[in-house]
Length: 348
Ligand SMILES: Nc1ncnc2c1ncn2[C@@H]1O[C@H](COP(=O)(O)OP(=O)(O)OP(=O)(O)O)[C@@H](O)[C@H]1O
Ligand SMILES: [Mg+2]
Image (tube, rainbow, N blue to C red):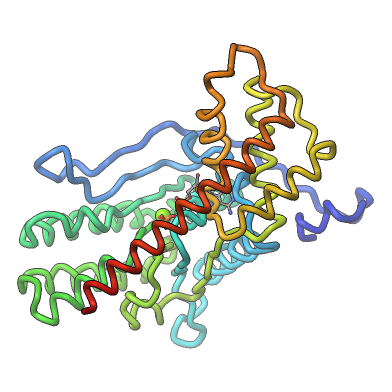
């Protein structure tokens, strides 16, 4: 039964199958120790389920069924590889691509997905890891050194995945930086070493696909800039857009609820504030999840001078938030037109 539909209707106990997972959250994170300086790390490595990702999955409010759709896909893909389904006959790459505008929850969704899967599959895999590959870092050094960093990053991933009892998630964020570098390299505006580095990454990604216990997640906010061959490899190409109105309302309501829990605002009852929440959801049309989650903080900083260690009245706080959202909308509009002007000037 789809958990999102459970809210809408009452179910009898015999209509549901209840699975209870108990687990301990881990606290360790490692970065790669191959780089010569402290600034550049090829990856971060998290042991799952991680304390750092607690609540991420639940906090994301996306279009209905999107999270379940991804979770179901991930389980199916891992089942196919576990059952040794011949990939020449049934193609399944265990690679997803989430794309969309900035701040819409793509990276969080990948982290939340790996956490959720690690918990659900803990009977099948003794250990679960998440490698977050720092694509920008791989290209930020001199290319000759980058090639070394790429090689070492991916061989560490492979050595972990060599143990079949380990479930390995690999997150490659902002994947467009990888492929746009290749294009720039091929067009001759980058040193020839760059071609080797980018090709090395793509070859490594291909090599990882051969491990049945590796699941790859990639994100981008410029799908157009991604190498077509790479896009083609992804089993799921999911657009993640700005949250629709009901999602915006839930995000804002959960954020104010948190402020009430922290006693920054007084008791908050979403039913009582329904009208103001509707108004807020209305005026924040087009806002990303990131901006929506920031709005209560921006509002508080505006009201900070009136805060005297006593919770602020939640209704007043909400009306102030409507004003702050309006200001953000104007600032965003101005920024967009400034960017447009800049583009026009460059085009001339
Ligand atoms: N739909 C959403 N529901 C709840 N929170 C959201 C949503 N979208 C974004 N957020 C919050 O916004 C913040 C930024 O999200 P995240 O970094 O995952 O976005 P992103 O799409 O990866 O952005 P970018 O493209 O800039 O890398 C996170 O704290 C996340 O919880
Ligand atoms: Mg991101």
